[in-house]
Image (cartoon, rainbow over all chains, first blue to last red; front, side, top):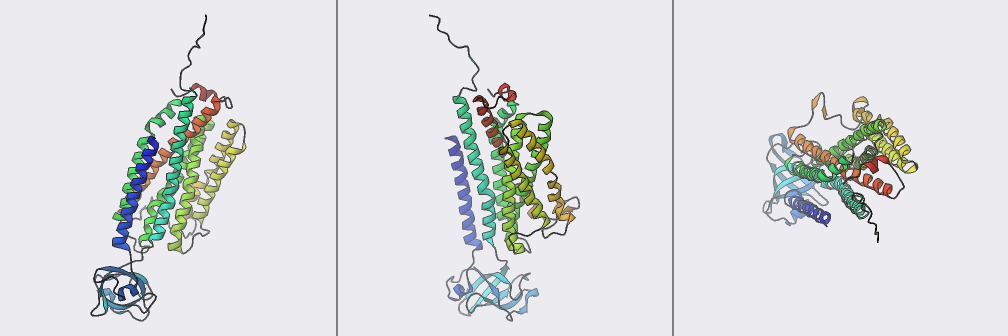
Amino acid sequence: MRLYVQWTVITIAAALVAVAAARYYDRHLTTVTPEAVVANAAGPSVVRVQGQVAAGTLEGDPAAGRATFRLSGEGAGLPIQYEGPPPENLRELKTLVIIGQWDADAGVFRAHDVALVTNYGFVVGAYLAGFLPIAVFLFAMERRVRRLYAEIRQTKLYEPESVAHVDTR
Amino acid sequence: MGALIKWMQRYEGWFGAAGAVCIFAGLYLGLVASPPDYYQGEVVRIMYVHVPIVQTAMLAYSVLFAGSIWYLWKRDPIVDNLCQAAAGISAYLTAGGLITGSIWAKPTWNTWWTWDARLVSFAVMLLILIGYLMLRTFIDDPEREARFAAVLAIVGFVDLPIVHFSVEWWRTLHQPLSISMRGIALSGEMLRPLIVMSVGFWVLFVYMLMVRTQVLYLTDLLRAKKGRLLSHAHLSDLPT
């Protein structure tokens, strides 16, 4: 019983960590497509847009932190006006995450930061592959060892040998 | 040596709890507090699970190697239980290291597998461990089984330096040693979660070793009770 309580607590703790990670991902790392931004699905809030810097569209001076380009997705793409810290990875044909707000009046996405594509699927896959088998192994071994101790106790292997009672009547 | 089993039964929980605390702290530091890599981006976070698993697999094999020498010297069946436990855990972690490494290789090298010296020598280590575990099922006489297995483990240990130094001895796709006598090629922000996770996995390995050794010892003990294995050492050192 104690084993199941222990492992229930561990499972709940792991589930809480997973939920916290998923919420963090939703809040800080999830991305939208350029088409969704153009359709004004995100509204005026700050969003992360993932797409490819279209060839022949990068203008301005990225080294000085000012650039304009078109971020293409599956459709026509999104015009970006970047102003922020000099981006290290901003170049044509590079798939990036652009952080900023959609200005519907001007029809341009005003970006203030650039991030790399997260590839979190690989990270999640590696952590699950690393931890799940160990957890299953430990649970199975803990259960087995407890059953073995119980079986040994039942066979009275732990008890010191006592003199057999002999009825002399 | 029954005292060792009693000690394991008493303190295993502490090791499990300490390992869990370190790993949860390492998860926070590795997944939240540490920065993404300049070239790899977020994928670098796989390092905090892959490297500790590989290190612990090699630590487990080192325990198997030392235990095998100890067994051939003392012929103590509980040491043999410990060796068999370390071999099983090492095989488990070696497979885990290969899988997590493969997942890391895809976004960074654009391939799941390549015939690289580090990868091949590590896969050979898994084959040696599988051979060790299979050998333990082939032989009827338990003492011969333990002796042969110990010799195989000692001979197979030659692969460990090859795994470790393969990235130095040959031109490999795998990155060279990040921590060596030449210094540490990692920033402090990435080194901290790596150390915490590594310590967590080492402590967790001790916990796994304690539990698995007890399973093997108790299984032998029950077999002895049933008269199938009358080992003097087991019968004279029963836990009370």
